[in-house]
Image (cartoon, rainbow, N blue to C red; front, side, top):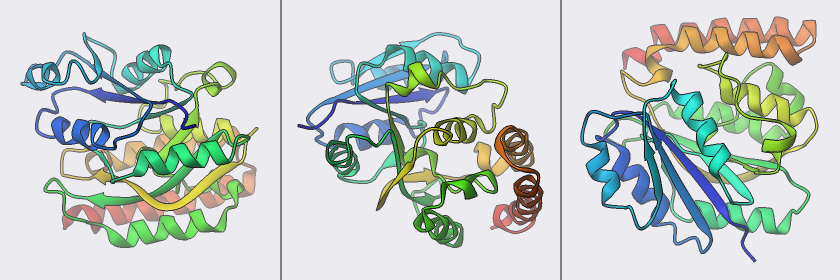
Length: 256
């Protein structure tokens, strides 16, 4: 029996990509699926696109306080046993949800699982392959404690049981650039991170995306998050890794 999976899609003025995102979810042919789109009051043609899928998903459009607020709204509405969020410019790979549903069915004690992720540009072409391989290396080591040093978990490839919403809580909006990193670290204080050795999603990177345009703020938030959970030695190595990574993004990766 496949568990019910709830996918939250936070969005704001992403008409350029959101239909591809929605299609990547609905074409999964997952037998027990709930899709909730939380729109922050888009002024482009996002609403017209959402209306086309009214019978296949639930959507809300109203002003909110940003991405974290939208995700938390969705978390309060989900009815599935397993939950995830997919930003409205990212996509799932074919059969990703079947793979995840089967994993949770076969591992009833697992509370959170992550998989591999492909980076793509605005045209859907793979980019930053070395970063993908670097994250894969750390994922395959299966040592959760390393997560306090670097965030190797790809958000769109990560799924968790909705019961954690009660025990762990919602996303913390004080970490707007690293709220997912904080959430993973909160969870692994009590639960082992499961790993599926397959590519489950594609993460879109382009000049105006958060990862490309705000890498310094993202790493600053990650450091603040790590300070909550890391030992002094781990925090020392986190800072070194963050400085190197940020330099790479600002001087190499974002200029390609």
